[in-house]
Length: 233
Image (cartoon, rainbow, N blue to C red; front, side, top):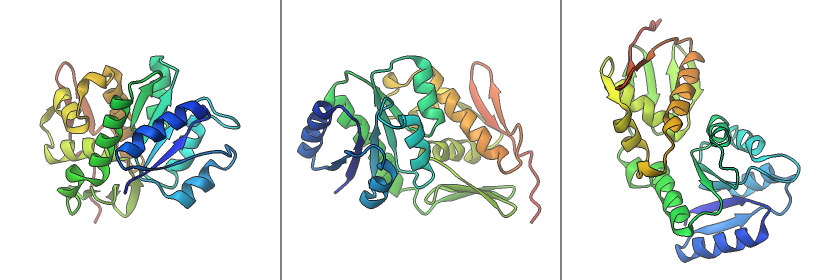
């Protein structure tokens, strides 16, 4: 049974969310002590997190960063903030998706189901033993990390999927539509800036391994990865 961790201070919303999630046989736990979100996360060890931005003590961005220090589980923000920058901030702090309140509970459950499939289900299963290596740079799809010359950086599920597409098609242009289709089930819920944010995060992860300017933007088409790094092995 999948476990959903709800970090939301609106008790009525929490109750409605849990009611809908229980219908689909998800287990849930909601936070009551907002100074102990991380310890609750550790003890519950959830498969997915639903996280509000406006919270007592610290905001959702803070807790998202803290959780990302422990886990790559999917994180979906649920917030009344509907500005583009709020969504960009959520993604930059480690979120995988964003739901604006008020939201349709069927859409919420569909997004949760989609993220769980990507992380643990049928989509993930076909990739669990796969890795991709290009010029000494290795992407481990199952363990969600990238290595080069003895250095390692951890990835989110979405970052790993983008890198898998780019690495397996090195030097070829990968269209934006292909990346969106590969990562999200329903593109109609994806802001056009979302992919830009994730590609920026991928570039930062590569930079952490000393790889600069490998992911090129091909205007009007998509992205291309050029293996311009050196394998010192």
